[in-house]
Image 1 (cartoon, rainbow, N blue to C red):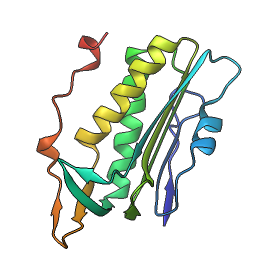
Image 2 (image 1 turned 135 degrees about the horizontal axis):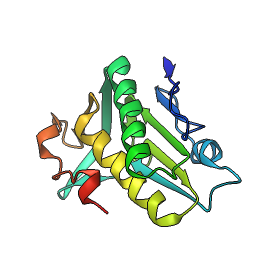
Image 3 (image 1 turned 90 degrees about the vertical axis):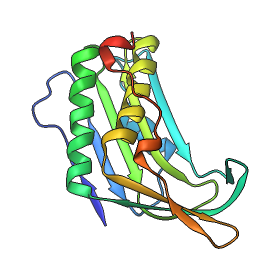
Length: 165
């Protein structure tokens, strides 16, 4: 299942794109969505499934999401970015659900902007905020057969955009 949701009333962000999908994510596709002749920078953050966490071997990850609310969170993130970094003209956020193997991409965030500093800051804000606010849950499956859900409370402290500049 795939769900798409654009921001309708955000004048400066002219190419928003948000997606939650079981299908593999593409760096080339998200870069193309953020690419624009007015950009001097496109920053892409790719989250991938790593082979171990805290020294413990990981077999695979499983992601679940409450899609309608997660897409609203993605839209809110883009609106907050537009308020904090008005030159940002593109925000794209894609997230996988389902079973992901080691090395697969679980999340992509792309931000296009005329200047690199704002693009980097906005991209970091987007991924950090998504991890704290989006109703997306991760279950780690260990090589020894055990599994555990990763607590949202385990996220690092999020710095509000007004304090991150």
